Image (cartoon, rainbow, N blue to C red; front, side):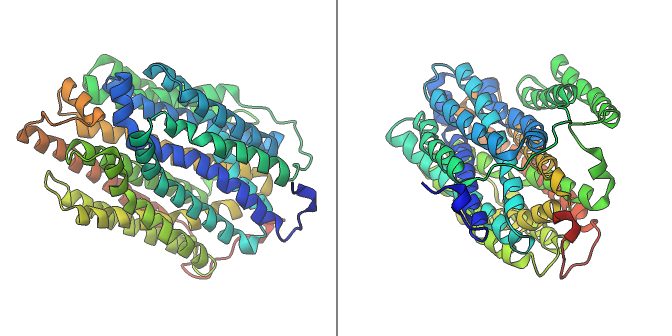
Length: 489
């Protein structure tokens, strides 16, 4: 076994990248698989529309919250220890999730999975930033995005294959070998953290406020599409969210060690980059889920066929990510990220115009491909910009904020999109959509369902426009961007 002390300084960053790549594969392959096999899980565990949506949303919600929490903990206690704990938590919960006897057991294990995944994802970018010299960081982050794209590419296919040949349970058990490998390689390769000052304290109250705030928002978004937007519980959730947001902001301003470092948002450069992260996630992250459901519910494709049909988006990211990594040293994040959002905008426009009961698949494929290319061009330069313009002792929390906003956008995108596309359907037809069994839909109902898809895509398109504006408003030139040298001393 290779000892981490025996690895030369020149090779060490690339060994760390190997470990973090296993972590990215661990988390994102599983995420991609569950998006495709959801109808089979719903059928076999007899889940209703609410339970079906919460199989997805429970993971996203808790992952979002704990990404911010563990970003803070990593800065205080060290990344290596937490990263290995994250591997262990995700691996064990994946094993147990495969043995779930009912939908609520599965949701419970998904929540534990989300906590482990949050630890892994939060530390990935920070570990790379700590390890790579500044001149090579964009290459390392570009490979990281590339690995993410590969994981998202093979996730739906592997999920479809496992579900059809074995069982949906194997989509969870499949993650176990990756987790074991990650723990072994992490122990062998990642060097111990330098001594850190542990005088800072965790913001427990802020963490609880974020949990309740986001939980009420997601619950209202998901329930509104099922029970109606005027339902008292839905309205209470929205009101609670509106009240808690300013409360959280006020509290974070008045404590010495806040969960969310609001001073980062006072700089226009960081505020623009963070806002663009959130809006890009709102715009893109539910595309694969929505079209996996579309191909199974409307086109009556099998799980495997639907998994193959949604590949163009991740292929687009796979193509664009290394290109973005190589261009980041020559052009500014302002130019590359904005151009990427513009490409995503065109892709969503194609999807919104083309979607229909008899839509041409190849036109939809072009639209999905362009959304993937756009996101691939956006993510690497935007992440590099954030991580190279923050002080080293704040990288964990900066990356935690970035990951939290990305996941928050994913939660909002998923909850809102599912609510929009099913809002006009009866409870029984909503159940049929999640189960992928809509043969009983009339032609009129299918048309209404597709109209919901158009509405969801238009909302995602508007989010992209706002993200593009935010990205363009960041200061700086369009070419020959150079990171702040003092941030890596």
